Every structure is written in structure tokens, then in C-alpha cells.
Image (cartoon, rainbow, N blue to C red; front, top):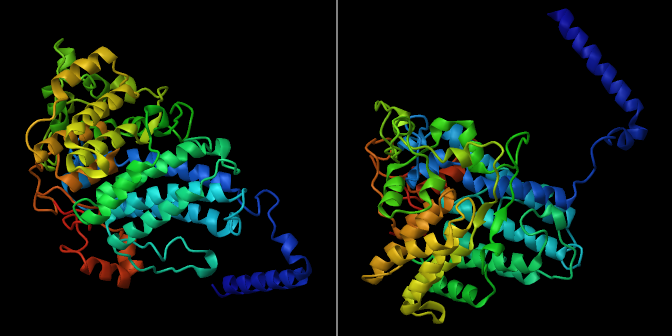
Amino acid sequence: MKRFAKKIRFSVLGLLLTTSACTNNFEEINISPTQPRSVPAEYLYSQAQLNGFLADGTNWWQVGSWVEQWASGSLSAPSQYLEDRDIYETNNWASHYELIKNLSQIRNQILKGQEGTPNGRTKLAIAKITEIYFWQRMTDFWGDIPYTQAGLPDDNLILLPKYDKQEDIYKSLLTDLDAAIGQLNATDVSYGSADFVYKGDVTKWRKLGNSLKLRMGMRLRFADAALSRKTVEEALKAPLIENNADNGAMPTVTQDGNPFGYHPIIGGYNGSKELNQMAAPFIDLLLAKNDPRLPRIAEPTENSKKAGKPVYRGLGVALGNSTIINRDDYSYGTIAIYNDRKATFPYVFLAYSDNLFFKAEAALLGWGGLTPAQAEGFYQAGIRATMQIQPYSIPEAAITEYIAREGKLTGTEEQQLEQIMTQKWISLFMRHYEAFAEWRRTGYPKLKPGPNPGTTNGQIPRRGVYSSTERLRNATNYNEASARMANGDTYLSKVWWDKR
């Protein structure tokens, strides 16, 4: 052992002597011949889009089961209302903050000082709109989170950031969003092909930014009615996503032969078919409405197909680990679409239909010069727009027939809101975070929890819990944020805007 330690000391001494003899050429020695000294903004931005926008469609085994569109049985702890911070929350938290880190590098390093120049202004604005999109998803999911002290330059890095209140985060995001939209300039240099969504088209980014503002404004409806109305009415006056061609959509590649960039639902299906059975409430609603999207969403059960009498049947949610099921008695996602490694279609993350359903809701309220009499028209247009996109591509005759049956808004304002939100719930299939947020915001559709008590006493979770690393590494700030919540850092605490 002593001989081994002596060898180490001599090795270290030799290394130090060698290093000291070469200090005159230190900078040259430490320049990698194979890696660039700085990463282009285009590279970081492409990575942020690829990893960030497609992440909206992952997490079906957690958030997708909470909004009762998917049912993962006992294979996923969160789907049983059980916390599993180490596997789920820690990775989710880390991946989101990695997105923020990459986008912050664009403004803090690569394009720093070019905020007012044609070479930097619009690139920074597009990156900021993208960052705000991710921040909203993060705070909607967790509530209070590190915000003002996150994403800072390396020379001002705060390793143990405080948790900002969600109310303050939203107000800051809205201010920053207005500023970013105002900085978009069609004559500037943009990202071009590095922008997978719009190829640097400033007009479309302005529409997406305003549509994001509309979404953020409506999210505040039951938490800050005055700010909500002001924000919504400002957005309604601005250019919005106005057809499916304007949709915020990420192109995807086939999973066959590609390591990443494929559609998240296809990737999830091929990763574990057992985590991809459809939930009973979702299937039951589609059946009840004779919805033409059903065959493009779900597969008849395996056993019913074998028997020659195909039927659709959803699996119950949060059944508990002791429940024994035969998965061939329940519907999976449509095999021809989601189980085909050669299949691909764009992943829509912010849609024209979103705006139409928001307009229907605004019309019920009489906001932005709209009237309750206009709500039905927006509602019907929202259904139509949803059915037209891939992978549905429903024929126009079938859409018209469906709207004739389901497109009439009736009853009180609250009953009409329930109709709007129920159709919106269907439209948000594959967009789990947004479906979860809209269900919490409005209380519609009315979902019943599964029988397993989990850690929620049998209630559907209202938020994600913080990463386990935060409890250990950033304990002081974590404990302060947890203490602000009614039920602490649990699934049962509500985020600030969740008032229903």
C-alpha cells in the first residue's frame, strides 16, 4: 500500500513538473483540435426545440394518466397516485432546467451585446418566446420554481436558487413575452433551417407569441380576473395562429433508423406497449359521441379482434397493484399509427384549435368585443380544426355530420363551458401537460379518480412534486417553497392559478 502511494506521489510530481515546463504554451495546449471554442446559436436553438417541444408529448404514464386519457396499470407509480421522485421527478426537473440553460447561453454568451443588431435581435426574440413557452410548462406543472436566479450567466451563477412565486413568474413572463414579440423584425437574420418549426418565419413566430399570450392570459382567469381579461383582450387584437398551417408543430422523423426526433407517442409505444393502453373515461366518451377520431386513436382489444367482433374498451385508471388484468381485453393506441416505426407526422404543441376554444370561452364572457352568441361558431370551428390535422385527417363530410350532432352549445354559461372544455380535452390528446393544466384550471371534464389511494388519499394529483435532489442540495429554498403550499410538496397542493 505504501509503495502504491509513493508511486502516485511521484506520478503527480512528474505531471506538475511537466505542466510547469509548458506554461508558455498553456492556452494552445488546452484548445481542443476537434471541438469548437463556442457553439453556434443555431445549434443550441435546434437542440432546445428538439428536446423541449417534443417533451410535451412524453410523460403519458404520469400526466396522461392523471387526465385519464392513458392507463398504465401498475407499471407506473405516478399513474397509481404514488410519488416516485427519484425516477420520474428528478429526471423531469433536470431535463427542463437543461433546456433553460441552453437557451440562456444564447442570450448570455453567444449573442450577448447583439440585442439591437440585425444579427442578434430576432434570434434572441425567437429564443425568448421559446424559453417562455418552457417556463410556463414548468411553473404550471410544479408551481413555485427557481426562476429569477436560474438561467444566469456563468460569472453570476447561483448554485442554490430561490423559488419564485408563480404569480410573480407569470407577470414577469407576460412582460418578457410582450418585449420579445416587439423585437421580432422580418428584415433581421433569423435561424433559417435551424428553426424546425417555422424556418425563421418572423410572421409565424409573431402569431405563435400572441397565441401563447392568449393561453397564458386565459390560464389566469380564476386567479386574477383583471389581469386575465387585460391579457386576453390584448392578444385577441393581435395576429394569432389563424389556420392549421400556422400551427406550432415539430416535424418528426421515423423511429426506424433514427436515434431521436421521432414522434413522442410513437416512441413511447415502441418503448413499452404495456404503458400505452387507453383509459376508460377517454374511450367511453369517444364511443358515446361516436367520434370519428376513435379508430385513429385506439385499437380494438386484441381478444375481441381474435373473436371476430372488434370492440373498444378502455382500462380503468389507478386500479392498484393488486388488481390483475388481461391487457388483451383493453384497447391500446392504434397499432397502424403508433406502433409503426416507419410512421411519422408532425407533433403539434400549440394549435389553431386552441385559439378557437379560447375564443369560444372569451365569447361566453363577453371579452374582447366578442358576444355569447359567437361562442358556438368558435366551438364548432375548434372541433373542425382538430379533426383536420394528422393523424386524424377526418373527411369533411364526417366532420360536418359530427358537428351537426355535437356542435350545439346549450344550457347555462357554465354548462356551455363544460361542453367547450370537454371537446378541448379530446383535442389535447397527446399534449399531456396542456390537458392537465386546462383540466385543473376549469374543472372540466369532470374526472373521477381511480380506486387506489396512493399518496393522495384517492384524489387525482394537482401538480408534480419537486425533484428529490432539490430536497437535499437546495434544502433551505426547497423548504421555504414547500411551506408556502397548503399541503406542502405533495401531489395535493394546488398551484397559484388552480382555484376550482
